[in-house]
Image (tube, rainbow, N blue to C red):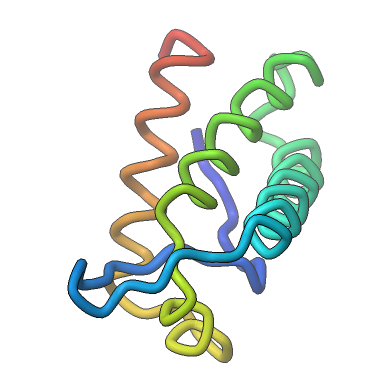
Length: 105
């Protein structure tokens, strides 16, 4: 599944020793924002024409949950302007995992 990851809500690699978990409110906002952005991008993507909105919602829910579980406070600043290479790699991993598990690809 081809996905556009141009949202302000991004994944990033972080070191456990320096990682500060997101507050519950921030995590909920990140989850919602990521899910909404993902669905908007996936519906617009012509390569997803054969998929139902329900399939795309399932994929985006999986992706947004993985994203918000992984994201730490320090990652927000590191990826504010542009995605780091580590973020792009992690985003691709989540995309592949979610596509495989939710879309049976």
